[in-house]
Length: 112
Image (cartoon, rainbow, N blue to C red; front, side, top):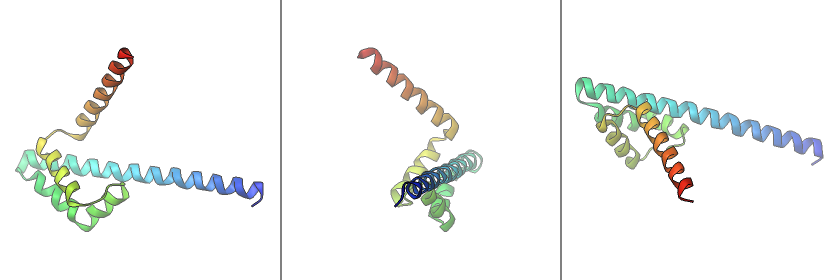
């Protein structure tokens, strides 16, 4: 391969990788929305865990989970059901996780 061809190949690969990452993030957002919908159903009708399980086991749900980079197996379905049963919306859970991670990093840096 000539230098120009190699550069074009590397540029195309980087572009495709970036596009793949964007698509994965988009599908991950769909999973988060499905979780929030199931939490809302749980609060309203008391059937949220069953709803997320039904969705995750459906053809569309399995496809979305796969595209988000999540293996759509029964262990994942159980985890989704547990998450919905806790009733903590995804935005709250994610912000809590981020603040805990930052706090742990700060504590670790101070200890060093």
